[in-house]
Image 1 (cartoon, rainbow, N blue to C red):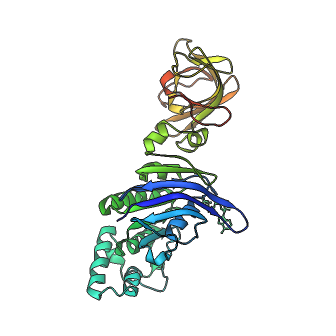
Image 2 (cartoon, rainbow, N blue to C red):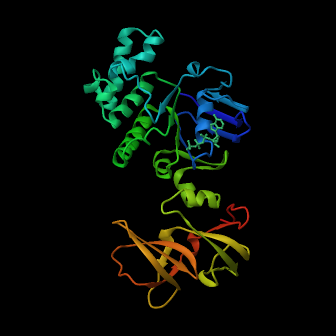
Image 3 (cartoon, rainbow, N blue to C red):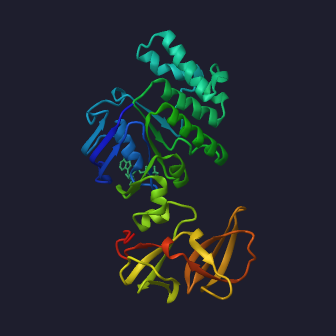
Length: 350
Ligand SMILES: Nc1ncnc2c1ncn2[C@@H]1O[C@H](COP(=O)(O)OP(=O)(O)OP(=O)(O)O)[C@@H](O)[C@H]1O
């Protein structure tokens, strides 16, 4: 087990693509870090630099206090789990698990014990004699995890390990990975573009945008206090509503309609206001501002109502028990609003 220290790391690929720019991050021993962001934001490149599969253009990566920039991947004592499992098709599950240990000259009795232990933890003991093609996707993913575990690495690196699985299996494997990581206490770095996976797995989320860190924080802190419009629209489903707004004397207006008043700590002027779907509230008896309903999505436990205030698109989440109407009136809890600079998109105020 080891801490990982990433200091001012950049990656420029041949041809001049700047994939990672000046990223610094301290990952504590035993911590589960999830790198999340849209396609092309540089998360795989950053992970591959930690693994040693990609050279580092500038900056340093240290694992367990040792700078590893020039250290071979095999000598970094990390284990990588890929989305395509990377199992040897002609070998049995047992041999897939034992392969790396045999190569390192680990005694047979030791190998047997480690494989048995991993197989028990992952509930793949009945399949040790099978070939990978005789397993389901979820079982193959477990074997890939097992191969990482038996090596007793200083860190696990996961590159979208669940993206080949169907939605239901992804949810259950997500839970398994989280519990396993907690039990083993191995420092882990996990790459995904799925914000829900990031929210549910991470001790801390690292949101990347264009090769730079946009925000680092615990999942709920990022959710409740996004540092920018980019993070606000990326973390959370449905995405946070963002609208141009005018603040004057603590009153917040969207399209001239005052949706909240008594807002403290925000200077008068034009801003981007952010509001979560669940923070837009229907008002009874003609109070609040008119919200024109466009269409509705029934999700079972909640109902997403898409509509607009003065032509500005907003989505609200309502209880399915409430009666439906073409026009509802709404308000917003003043303390639930987020404010962002209209130009830079950075969070302002609270
Ligand atoms: N070998 C390479 N040579 C040149 N450019 C590359 C190379 N690999 C990646 N890139 C570029 O670097 C940027 C970051 O790519 P990277 O694969 O790290 O992103 P990502 O966030 O992991 O995306 P995805 O979720 O699609 O895998 C992209 O613009 C990509 O086109």
